[in-house]
Length: 167
Image (cartoon, rainbow, N blue to C red; front, side, top):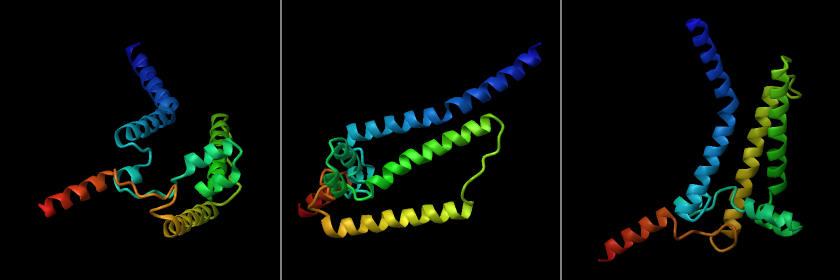
């Protein structure tokens, strides 16, 4: 009896880990982002710590502009906002469909080969990188959202060192 109960506990713990694994990760990430925003004044880690915007800077404001119907302003804030939103919809939907098929015991048939998917994501990363570099060249440090943050951790360190050296 105790041995069977022990096996039941193992399986229950395993199921609980699978059930709550992704949800817990999402909650932890959201809490971390809120903590960063509260402590550093920005939800962008790069801008808060290094003072320079990241490749995704402007995405939140772009979504806000889209919700207001201001498409041109959204594209100015982040030129790849539609690509980002499409990926934020397509990837979770595909993961959910894959999970449901696995739950039913069916094999997931991928429409693309692994190599094609890898080439797609590498190309997508390169596109984001090129757009980031172009935005940095054209807009940094004077135009939203590619502004320098002098209140960043690195900004404080640099100003502290300058004050030390000027004494």
